[in-house]
Image 1 (tube, rainbow, N blue to C red):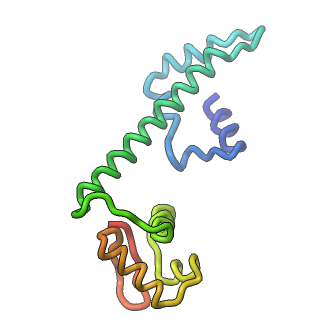
Image 2: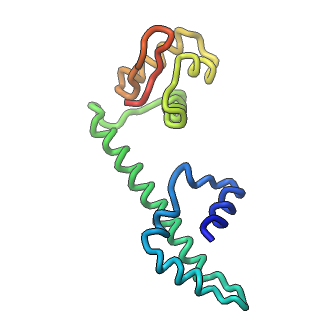
Length: 147
């Protein structure tokens, strides 16, 4: 049932594995999982109880993700010397890129926004001075990660 549920979510465009793992919730109380699963009436195929249990698992899993995000965000804000940092839309896209890819290069920024090398350096320098990015490597091999 869990594999089928994961397949249905994936086929509908919900790749939940990137964000949370439903199996953790269901594995935490296997007897309850099997009790609800076996409680489906074979004649009427009424899945109401199982669907309610499944949705509760999604809710609990998403709440755990939210808690992690809030915790990580508050840790970052505490580290920031000036409190909350205001970023431009371009800077937010740079941060999103790093969140998705783990790092960013000057070339990545140049390609994303069709900027000159000088404009790229200015954007990276701003984010570095704000304490958002940290450079790694040297010369042409330099790349940036979130602090």
